[in-house]
Amino acid sequence: MKWKIKNNCISELFLGNDNLIYPWGIETADSSAFFSLEDKVGYRYSVLSSASDFGPEQYRGSYEVKMQEGRWQLDIDDKIINSTTIQRSAYLNCLESSHFMDFVVRFRFKKEFFPNAEINGMHYQHKNSNLYYQFPVREAQLTGSRYRVKVSIDEVTCPEVFSPQMYVRDYEDEWVVHARMVPVSWEKEVIKLCNRWAHTRPLPQFFSNALLKVPFIKRQLWYRGERKPFTGPIMRRINPLACPIVKLGQGEVLFWKVTATFNTLFSTS
Image 1 (tube, rainbow, N blue to C red):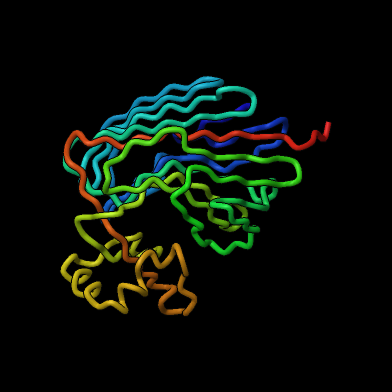
Image 2: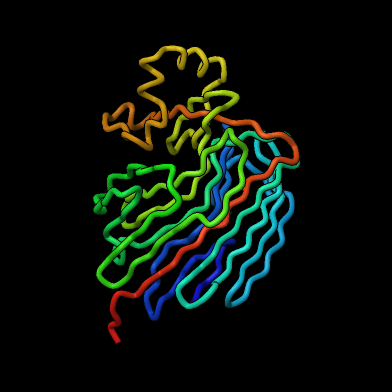
């Protein structure tokens, strides 16, 4: 197993001559800002300080990040454990009171090697549906004719306002797999406009509050893009999504330790 590190991420991962992935990252968002560990991805946040180093088997990074609604420190530690296993750790410490939509360890696998997925006892074929098959489970598995990979949560630390979950999503020519902290109780609810001209900007809070008091509107918009993307030309262009936002206090911590384990089903050599 070999990797390449680029733009702050594991950008390529080779078993033999096959690169099985697209860049892996860490992601989180508040009401307005979206942070991605991958360089030049995301919007409306600032990296106040950063340091990283990597070698053939370990990548460490430390980032102080200012969001629109908070400031926190992110420390990552990615390791090649052996010839088939990578372990990824992400530790986030709130440096001041901060808001979160979620906190994600992100994996991306090429469809050409992994056409099928299994999670929560359910089996899915890649159909480019872009739906989030998300469950409160600890592992997900992708399979193909030559390789199998299991992504599993080893350790997690989060307040009770979050539920640790996993999802698989068949998007274009890849499977996206997330270990994701999802709010189960929250401070507020927002409506975001998830399109290329708004870049996931929220509506004014008073407007979101008023709209989400209407049960029909809330049912239609709640995590809409994740469970049933709009298909009509107008709504698809506007693409509103309603979601909850939690508030964590200074000193509160979020932590993931997640492992990806590969099996080669047969060798072509």
